Image 1 (cartoon, rainbow, N blue to C red):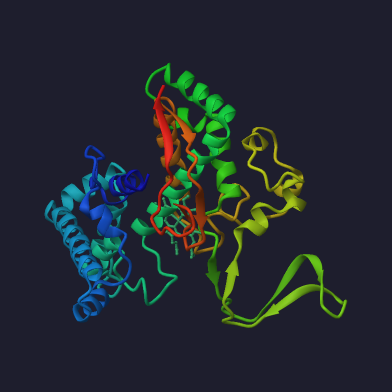
Image 2 (cartoon, helix red, strand yellow):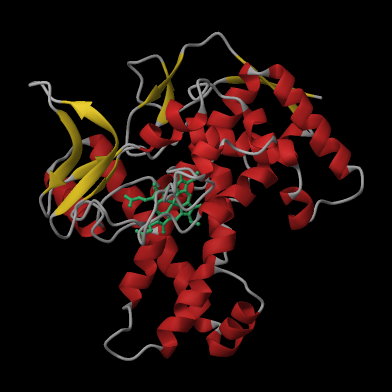
Length: 353
Ligand code: HEM
């Protein structure tokens, strides 16, 4: 799933193929992208510590940087005419970025380093934790959400089979177009419900730029017995936003709010949800957050998940193994086998239909 998500954003985002999934081992760039932090910082640290793992990290960073510069230069050499032809055809985001950069005034222009940094996650990632670049933002979030969907489908064989029937029936009329995919109700419901119950980026932080009074939807009782209806928050106070507080709120979604039930999306949502003015950009959910720094890739991610699910479910059946899978809390949650391991994996029995 990690490789599929990276290849999707590589084609759709930077107009290049990084790892077409035709080999059994991931492309070295795919692995390299997982490294976090600015290149100069990592190189300086590893330069003074002769640890084997750290030396490997140095190679990984150098590979990611070299490959990004190659892609950028190849695009740059194709000239403005070719770039604008591709952009006119609605191709990839990097082309659009490069085109906007050509047109920008001198003061607004991004340097070549900044443009390639969009592709390598290099710039300031460690120094400014709120900085996100789309290759990073687009890979683990989508791939781990996909893994969660497959896990849910493996736990709910009945829904897996209904979804497969829906997809195969639609495919019998020929290759699925964007509109065909968007019209499949169970596919849509399975994705929405998983994104509701399992928002994987669930520890996002914000800081108010001025003093604010935060109203509470329901009063809470203080230790002295008084009811508190609002909380004053001073400018600059770091706040962790818990998407689950809204996504799984029983007062909004009903008594079964904690359960994974895709069928809730097949009939109109409770009016408590639709009237609550939840600010989330997607589907009354806080999964992709809200406001001017909300996720910009939710539609991309939704389409990608639909494509992958349709392809995989019409070919394979998914079952759980008896290995104990644990979902770890992190900036993007990820599964491991047992609590000791740090290796992200979701073992599954996958059989050909
Ligand atoms: C299921 C998949 C995804 C989830 C759950 C998700 C969630 C989020 C969240 C919660 C944020 C806010 C982070 C913060 O402010 O700290 C965010 C930001 C962002 N996301 Fe996503 N995302 C997903 C997929 C994608 C994809 C596929 C792309 C690119 C095509 C993308 C691009 C971005 C970018 C560029 C930002 C930063 C926006 C900004 O700071 O202005 N995301 N995402």
